[in-house]
Length: 255
View (cartoon, rainbow, N blue to C red):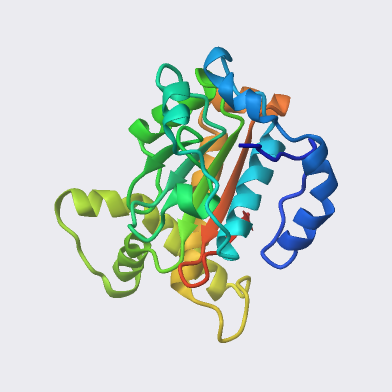
């Protein structure tokens, strides 16, 4: 398999112009492609050689192919299993919701050992999740972290019901929802202050999903030197994204 990457400079695209960005970087992707033999030698390399923008371009390309129903090219065969059996060299950390409708490897077109996935309902970050992210950055050298929310998230919907209707959830479920409530309040506050997008398309649930992603991204950036140091050096990028359940599109520009 040949992996396609991009140049070191890449602006985060919106859903509207992502295809244009991919086309404009087509030549660069081909020129900087990681040869197939690089994957065969992966077990002998201490860390991935990809930059944050290269890793992001690979995920963008994979989702673009997923949208067009192109054949899945992720590496899943015996040779790949053997190559990663002793060591892992993922290209990105994905903080994702546990929702069964959000299949990370499929929607990004990635194979075995390429994504370091942290999943829980509502894609939040507690101590355990943060420790997992720090391990991937410090010990595996992962250059990219994506916080992925999604359309009609049930955990965020539960937090919305707490804010709007005073709903109560007992036990661990209630504790799981608590970190999402500030995102709902933020989205609701923006609407009341006239800062939110106007029109019939505005939706508190979807804006809360986006606000929740943004808050998690900011928490990671402020979490400590394990993440802030590589961020300042440019060897790590942390971005927010939203997955559309209806059309399969990933908006990489949630900010």
